[in-house]
Each structure stands twice: as structure tokens, then as C-alpha cells.
Image (cartoon, rainbow, N blue to C red; front, side, top):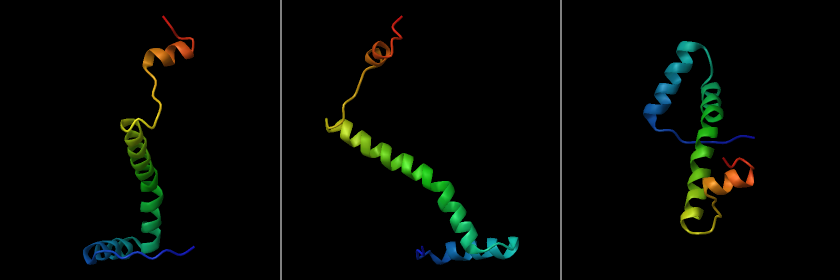
Length: 75
């Protein structure tokens, strides 16, 4: 699958410089950035979505005492 993005000229320049100096392609570095950063982005946005549902009363929550009891960890 091919995806096209527009980069700010200064980012394009930095990417080109890095690729030229290391002998790798710009595509290599873009792929690395996406693969390494996607997990962090998913964590952030999915957590923000859950937080919004919790604050809106649309997500069930449990106290730590409830969780300990359900897991049989009561002291």
C-alpha cells in the first residue's frame, strides 16, 4: 500500500540530509518513525478516548478494593 504525505520543507530537508549522510532512503526513515511512534500514538489517543468515556459516565470503573476482592487478594 502506498501513502502520500506532505512534509514541511524544513522537515523534508532534514530527512534528505539524514538519508544522504547515512546511505539509507528517506522511505526507510519514515517507515522507522511510523513503526516506532505508532504504538505511542495509539496508547495516547486510545487512553484519551477511555478517559473521555469514564468522565462522561459511559465506561464502568472499579475501585482498587473491588478489584482486590474479585481477584481474591483481600488482606
